[in-house]
Length: 301
Image (tube, rainbow, N blue to C red; front, side, top):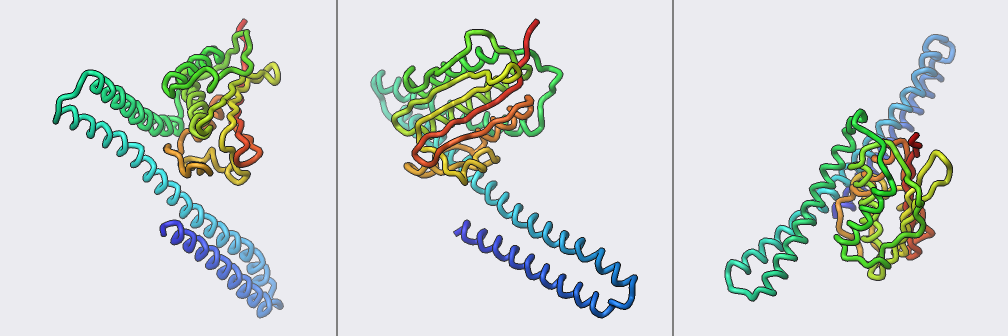
């Protein structure tokens, strides 16, 4: 219902803008006809006409963008509410069970393990929101220094395996340079970007995960982290949107996956702050996808 109303609102403002443009054209043409013998009003009308049309078009575009932005923010609020409410409800349920009846030690350990996982999920959600805010504000570049990109990717890869309970076959190296690769920047931000790339690949890989990680050096001044999955793939229309803030691509197999819609936005924002970029490639739905983050490389003397 909400999407239908917004679609109608967008159509209304587009139609209104078109009507106003048509009215402005009619009025301007009439002005020229009635004043064609008077040079000053005619010149004034010719000058004001394109300005008026441009203003109407820009106003319509602004209104449509605001409606879509509000829709994205509502989607984000729904997602973040779900991401916070679900683990909290789970933790509360297990705590009430522990309090209300005696359990054997094995059951207690299982409950503690599940509650710890729910806590990690809560913490991850909060960190995503905070990191998105920090990325938009920007960190002080004076504190940036040379960091070993190979080491960052290796550490995050092992951490992702541990958190997601993945085998070495599910998330593995394709190619990794033996030499140290140095980039200038914030080690914390780069870790966040790499983790978000891995986390996105895990979410959209389905049950049989086969994620390949490559560190490439296409030229002497560039290093590229490429994460290739064999999952659900991405439609052509979605490729342009998935790096937008609050946007979450639907999973054709399971519907909307959980998340805040901030992960890939953070990846691209961090990459661009470090002088690089991030982009995605896919042959289509069901054909997997490849995410690449490029960064400028430096050499230590």
